[in-house]
Structure formats: C-alpha cells, structure tokens
Image 1 (cartoon, rainbow, N blue to C red):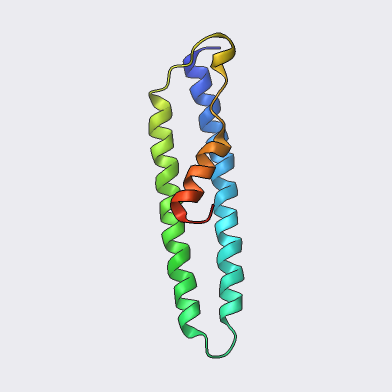
Image 2: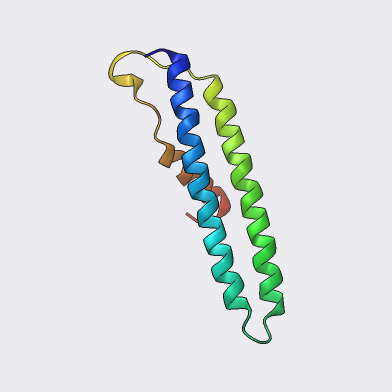
Length: 100
C-alpha cells in the first residue's frame, strides 16, 4: 500500500474520531449545564459554557496538528507499516485537556 493511500486512510479515520470526540464534548457540556440549572448556580452555568468552548477549540487544534503531522509521515514496508493507533492521539488530546 502506498504512503499516499495510508495517509488517506488516516485522514478518513480522523473524521470519525473527531466526530466522536466532539459528541463526547457536547454530552459532557450538556450534563454539566443541566446540573448547573439548580437554583443559585449561575456561575456554574457560565463556567460550563466556557469550559466547553475551551475544550472544543483545543480538540479541533489537536486534530489539525495531527493532520499536519500525517502529511509528513512515511510508512515503512512490512510489520512496521501498521498505522499509529488513533486512540493514542485521542489519549494525548485528553491528557492535554485534563480529561484523561
């Protein structure tokens, strides 16, 4: 399999993983937002919104950086040609967000 084909596969995986991560952020935000609707928790509502926006921006930035790095990858032949696991990218993104 050519390097260009492997890069294309990684890019297509990115779309699925990024959508999954965005859905996780939305679910987490909505859970925190609903919890903040308890009377007297206006600060928590605002904080939940800010945290969501920050996490969303950081996640998008992490995926863009990964996509840029993939463009420079070369894939050796044989057993070493296995694609890096996208969950490793997700784990590093979660650590940078303080959620992993």
